[in-house]
Figure 1 (cartoon, rainbow, N blue to C red):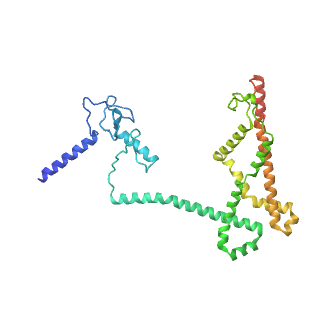
Figure 2: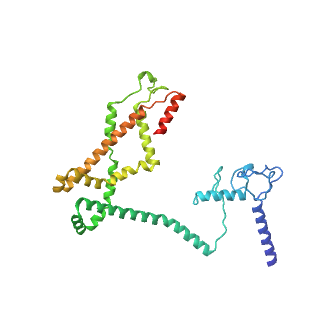
Figure 3: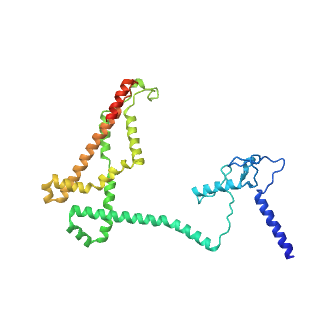
Length: 322
């Protein structure tokens, strides 16, 4: 009886292996030709024995080589390891059977997953701690520059916990102050007084510009806004000037307060520093407004000439000199 059972089990195992090898279905004479939807090869081009149909698709495209499908599944799992792999046509989830792991391999696999899950939190903690202590050091240096050593030591002795909360907020408040765009309000006011519209004869019945109509202020303002968004999103140079100006404001305010308001600085240091900071903000804003208006008008006055060989050579030589 034991010999018969072993032979039966061996026969059943060979049948399962043969079923897996041939995909579970042998094509009959009336069945459609098989073609792999990944490599687009069929039995006529290259006869193979690793056909499978792992989803609910019908017809010849339901067949796929097991090796091709395995490579395709590996690529999908690299891009999204936690997402189940499904058919691109019928959205059937593939039944992927993995060989069992021994206890030691399973323990290492679980340890690796927990390590990968824990590392982002640890990294965020390290980055947050670095930012916090950097902000605290910056706040302490700013307070030392504005008030002096005696006042800082006195504040630290009176309430150190409050200082640990307030000092890191100094650079944060300076950076948030960059969100106050008072120069934009002034620029809009200046442009509102000198707006140029499309002439009425260049407009259609719906009030939209006709083809070939001159560009108005609305177009150039939208272009300037889009240009600023692109520079801020794609170019690091469009963001760093604002951060540098915000973080260097206390030092510049102290230098200007001591230089321009030396009389007030001797009697009231904080007032002189505040006036120095206000002077820097106003001068920088006025210079920024003038530069934006100059670039705006320069862009509006641009024109394209008809082609002329001699004139193009002259323009090219002038551009090379500059």
